[in-house]
Structures are given as C-alpha cells and as structure tokens.
Amino acid sequence: MAEEQVAKGEEFARKAERKILCGCCAVLGSNYEEAAQLFNKSATSFKLAKSWDRAGSVYIKLSKCHMKLDSKYEAANAYVDAAHCYKKISTKGAIPCLKQAVTLFTEIGRHIMAAKHCKEIGELYELDQDAEHAKTYFERAAELYELEDATTSVIQCKSKVAQFSAQLKEFQKAMQIYEDIAQKSLNSNLLKYGVRGYLLNSGICQLCLGDDVAIHNTLERYQDLDPTFSRTREYQFLADLAASIDTEDVEKFTRAVKEFESATPLDAWKSNLLKGVKDALKAREMEDGDLT
Image (tube, rainbow, N blue to C red; front, side, top):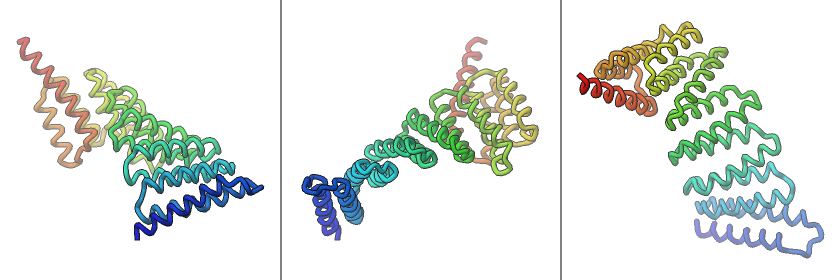
C-alpha cells in the first residue's frame, strides 16, 4: 500500500514539473494552476504513505506555484502543510516553513493566522529547549494577537514570554509582564480568577532578585493592585517565603514550600526558581555562620 502511494506521489510530482517546464502552452498561468493541482495530489499520496519528508518538499513546491499565481494566502497554507509534515520527523524542517507562512499571512493582513503560527514556532522552540527563540516568537505572537484585540490569546502568549524571561534570568522583565497581565485580567470576569497565579509568579521572580526589602514592597503593591490578594494562599506563601529570607532560615523556607505544595503542587518552572532562591539562602546562611 505504502509503495503504491509513493509511486503515485512521484508520478503526480513528475507531471507537475512537466507542466511548469512546458513552454508550448500560451497561457502560462494555467500551467501553474494545473501543476498546483498535481502537486497537491502528489503530497496527499506521500502523506498516505507516511513519507513525510517527501510530502513536505512537495508542499513547498505547491507554495511556489501559488506564489506564481499571486495567491499568498494559498501559498502560506501550503507552507503550513509542509511544516506539519516535517513536524512528524523533526522541528528543523518545520520551523522555516512556518516562518515563511507567518511572513505571508502578515503581508496580507491575516494577523490571527500569523499569530497562531508564530505561537506554534514558539512551541517548537520550547520543545527544543531554546528559551531565547521561544520567547521571541511568543512575544511576536502576542503583538499580532493584540492587533485583533484577542485578549485571551495575548495573555496566554505574554505569560509564556514571562516564563522564558525568568528562565533566562530576566526577572525584572518577567515581573513586569506578570503584573501587566494581572492588571488586564482584573477587568475581565472570565480572566480575573487567574490573577493570584500571575501575582504568585511575579512574586517568585521578585524573590529571585535577592532584594529582601523589595519583596515586602512588592507584596504591598500587589495588595493595591488587587485588595483580595492578601486573603489568598498565594499571598501567604509569598509572605512566608519573605519572612524566612529575612531571618535567613532555610528550614522555614523549606517548610513553607512543602505546606503550600501539599495543597497546590508546584510546576517545574516554580520549583526550579524556588530552588535557586533556596540555594542562595543556604549560601548566605553558611557565610554568616563562617563569620560568627
């Protein structure tokens, strides 16, 4: 079955190439239209055979046909189809195709489509553990979603930007993003329930900066931003962590984390950042012990 589909795919592709190379037809556009149809059939056959690499390469040829026909929308979609074939194998072939699609969708004002695929690029970089590039594309996705007032999608993407900023030790930037998201979410009945989570993330970033005084000022600022925050477990957790840092008490810090986690498991991002704070607190405790 697979071999039969591969043979069909190759035959359709050869016919498409001949259509493009044929100079006998007076109407060149019709050649590209027929070639596009054949390339589409070729790609479908290769997909049925699960020959993803060949399907992807044919979709790229299909995109070029659509460009010759001045159809950027169809060309962009063909690049997306190519990317999704390459994704079956690896991210290396998928990302360049998605970047081409984003460029074309942006050029024709399809901002939501461009944003969707920018986000997809960010997710692929995230899978590759490339925080810098992931941050860049989630940031671009947020900008494109903002052009269409897609608030929920903007917040989702900006939250990822903050996440990667913190991973890259850009804690001040991460804090600012989380606070901005919290502010916007307060104005929405649908989104306001996520505010305490954003403020918790921002507070953890503040702890990572190692400024003992600043965390108390930050908690006051959060209270001004959302008067209900001081009644949440997230606020109490941050206050307990701040108190343990004030007294340089590693055991108290560890206890606060365990107590919070007994009711609300921490994700890997929070755990990693808090481990960094705890390690810094241990180092301070040891230095002070050496001085006495």
